[in-house]
Image (cartoon, rainbow, N blue to C red; front, side, top):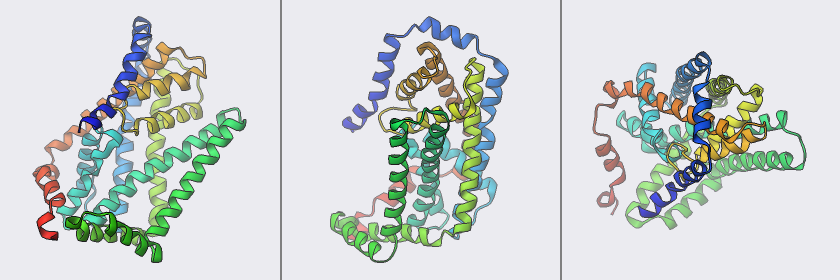
Length: 329
């Protein structure tokens, strides 16, 4: 537990270092001169983004044979977003899996739906970030190597997933899992993994095409919001440039070394915006407004706390799933 919190303190320590050497007054002045209407529209872009992501998850769970109405899905997705905002790597979003299990789905399929939902965002971040870098950067050996290794890593990850979820690769992965699992959890972990793998086999290519389209639309809203924040601050940077910056900042905040990207997002913003001649004060102002948007998103998603979909003891559900020592012995 101590090591976990020490790791999460890296981001805040980076932020303290930045603030120590920053002209805070200049940063406040940049924020004070922000244009209001582009910023308001940027804040509102989260609503269609959330709707697209909800529909994406609805398509994923429908492909697995799990039926749930759109508004019920919307409430659960909003609640998972609310809990995920304050957790490193947005791991709190996996709370959707516990809701699906409560609805009668197996834990493996439930985890698969949430895993694939998050994987779509991460893959799109990697691909769109490389695409934006290809368009706007001076294409020398540095960007070329970055793009090549990133796309190679994406393809390698997809191949590994395909291998360990099918045929002999699946059987080998199960043997390895049974070898490294605690005896008290071996049986249950094997069942969960088998159900998880069946999710890959049940998800058809057509559903994946729809999922990709919805992912692109959701991130399009996010990138447009970041672009509008830049415009509100007076940045003369093209949309693709801001999309690249947004992708890199989002990837950095996935690292479990901070809370809500404090420090890590600021450092990435200073580094990326500095290439466009933006001062550190302007970059920190940009990062601060992005943080304010994230907090605003949490406020929007807080409506889900009043929904019947989240009116049960989540902690008990999690304990019931995780505590099966006596059953497996």
